[in-house]
Image (cartoon, rainbow, N blue to C red; front, top):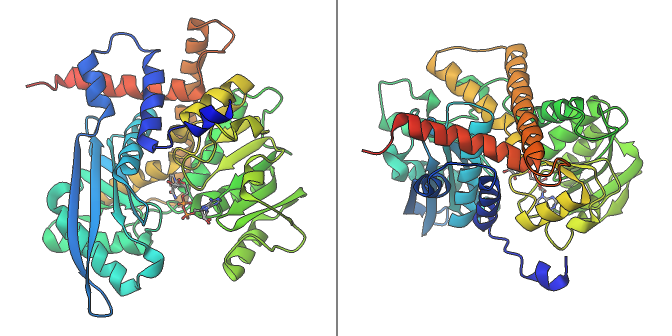
Length: 437
Ligand code: NAD
């Protein structure tokens, strides 16, 4: 990739999502143009501007939105993000990923996502509580247990979900409203296993992919070297679980930088150090490296688990891993995808790799609606079934697409296969429902 080409790369997440979608469409016959338009663009985007009383007595107006991308297979499902740089394009792309993710992992949801432009690091707990409650009041009946169901995302957590539930419940008294939001604290209807679900799901998915022989010479995680970008919920848990499953964690990073050790890092020790010092950087016995060096580290598997658009046209050629497991949403751009594909680097796409989170959210929703409480064994067993099936469906479809192209696999990627599976499932429901009046 020339420098000028990389300079021209479009890092708008929705533009990248559209590129992935358009690429997948080239493998699908017989979908009418009108349906394609309906499947890529969001069904509804709600903007709200609302005032919040700040601790110093001032009033500040905040801008929030909720994108309902598609509801053909079930209620919208997707997190709410609090971040200063959150944009409509980003939330729209993340909502589209949710539509495709819920379809490929086959749970009865569509896709949604929300965001409020704010910096939670600069807000007090009281201000965050008032902001969350007012945002939910402004959304009104746009969310609901059978219409659109939020969950945590970047800088929102169990406490935020508890406020969302309580506000909605106040507005809809006398009903079982627990299923309006997932990722709640355990004591108020949260599910066992939800906290670890994304990383646990990505471990199950990776193990199944390796079992299927997709990466030559790597049938299990035994002795496999792994680098992880991002040491939050998804990344730190993935490092721990992959380590427990036999892998060697050779490099990790967070927003302040990276560390590495070819002998292997102890993920729990790294986490304890991060909790104490605020960063993975500075761990005794580990060497310090930059964030870019973590991505380009000489390892077997790379797990980006931080932000979108991290592997781009300008650094894709430097990747040394044989397999990228996308725990983050959209960490590989469309141009980088092409470069990695030419290099023979496999990518287990986000809509499969990190779908464990929404799968266990679905389990939480079912438990809430049925007044049930499942034990951890049941949650993990059902999660494993779902992840294995999603990987099998993706690999099976990839095998068929490879045969349809030139037989040597140079055409289709695992992302193409996952998206084709998702799009066909959604399109088939659109047609069967005869959705046009
Ligand atoms: P988090 O806020 O808990 O952790 C994010 C981590 O990334 C932090 O350690 C932060 O320091 C690090 N980070 C930020 N900028 C970085 C940079 N430039 N380089 C390296 N590290 C950096 O968030 P999370 O919940 O772990 O989510 C991470 C990603 O996984 C997001 O893309 C999210 O959408 C995706 N995801 C999360 C879940 C889930 O259930 N948590 C589910 C599906 C997808």
